[in-house]
Length: 138
Image (cartoon, rainbow, N blue to C red; front, side):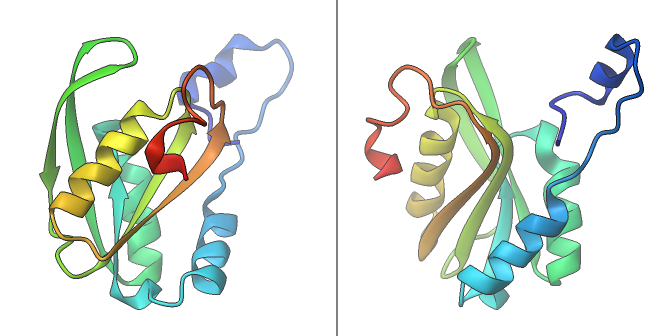
């Protein structure tokens, strides 16, 4: 579900279908976030832009993107928010979270841009290393 790279389908010698979490994500947002009509759906990186624009279009809300620059794997150097979350609920959507560094940095960036609240929806929660002990996960 929500393969990290669609090319992965070609690495198997049996038929593989990539299922998308989007229908379940949309249902969850509508049923669990009462302020969803006043939200901005946010991708924590450029790779998820297509995913969040599709979700935002179906909800008829705005979307934003966080451009991140890395020093090395699992270490984000700088994040730049492209879009507006001021006085809005920000819903981060990503395909996976490993150490949760990206998600936590993105949540901090959104709160500093004056989002009223931040939710994170992740298809694959790996939660390795310090992930669970991160303050933003509480």
